[in-house]
Image 1 (cartoon, rainbow, N blue to C red):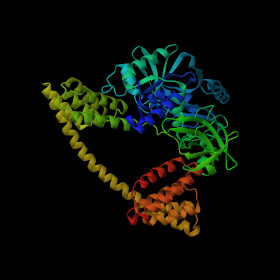
Image 2: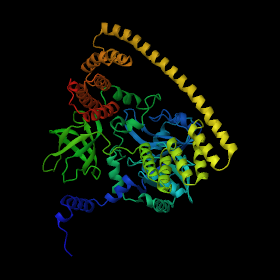
Image 3: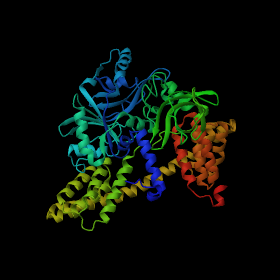
Image 4: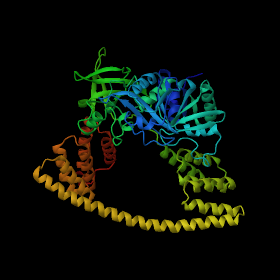
Length: 613
């Protein structure tokens, strides 16, 4: 058999095929990685454990011990959390979930003992009990955009009539029945993708994993190996205990500071250091991403790094990223080197020469967005429905059911699903969908209007008239609410502007005494923004950035004022300078916002001279 020549199949596609075959041979986990990114990757996790904190004083005792707000949790909800020492260093990190009056901790199994020892050292007369429940469960993880629909397939439930069947919000937890498996489900990500941690009776983990694979086969579900989910974890920028952080790591240096720290809860151990780093200079080093130059052949390894002959930090996790087609790493870098976009050359002992890389803001791969995926499924269903002249396309119905599973508050999806089912002659199902929507939002006019139509088709005239009357009453009420809302909004705008004028007078008095007061200059700028006078705000915000060169929020506001006044070139320059300042300080929220606005500006043509003023 003759081997096809490159010209016969297209040189570009042939080279692509050869390249991907080589990468598949070198990195055999790509197929598993694809399950995580496109379908659902499933594995039994051996390193995780479950701890329980019980007793009537559990919440009040935990509140000052950990850095997140325990008292804000309601049954079925959870949050990332951590135990710190007095210097703000992480002693244990975990997710904390409220189940009834007890609190469950998902944590590395070998960290439960040390955590309990530290807890017991500060337990006095409080009625609190600790227990390690790990031995009673197997821990099954499912990750990927089709995770929810895989669980629904195994549960054999109607997602459109039971929209809260599985935990919806991140960190939520609930008991779930998956056929013969009684499971405690936690909505957690270990890869950046949507997914769950499922706790099942000890010894039944592999059977549950096999059942999930069978149920999720149509959705690309399958078991995966550790290399695949480790690669996805690194691409998501998720730090791992013992690899990317330990007892010497300050929480302010890690992404956990964004999810595991409450700045409004009150006192806890290490709070003073965490607050000081947040409000002033930022941490000396911080966790960032390194994207290595395309074509780098040698896999970077963990360990200390030097840049320009100086100690610059350390690489902690490394992988070849299928998403970016290059090596990437998680690293801690000193303030001078960690500005996103910075090109650096890393010196490593034993290396033939410097390794080129670029500093990037984590994550390498953006996290999954449930609502965006639900919207895409909804749009696909509508497109199919428009082309379905015979009303026989059941795939459109399936897409809407999955959209509702991902976003149980998606009213348009319920309405479209009800209409499609009715058009297909499945009016009983359509009524069930609209009844669910009416329960979720009793003031949804379309739920009652559609119910009226569906009841008429079933000959249920009395029920149809009742729903029609409900729809009419809701419409009248909503008109009144809209009018009242407009009046309230106008009053609120007047109040805000009046307060802004008062603050301007106060700040002027301060600046007469001290023209270089950064809070007063920034306050003046923000007050003019509230008065919708961006041109008058600009001089004060510019002065703020001159007085305090790391005032990240001032750069963001100044850039927005330049945008509002059509000075796009100045806005770009301001954002670039602000991103560098925020990177040095570790102010991730304004940094991300400025990067987003800069990308938007970069997509705008600059042919108009006024945009370059």
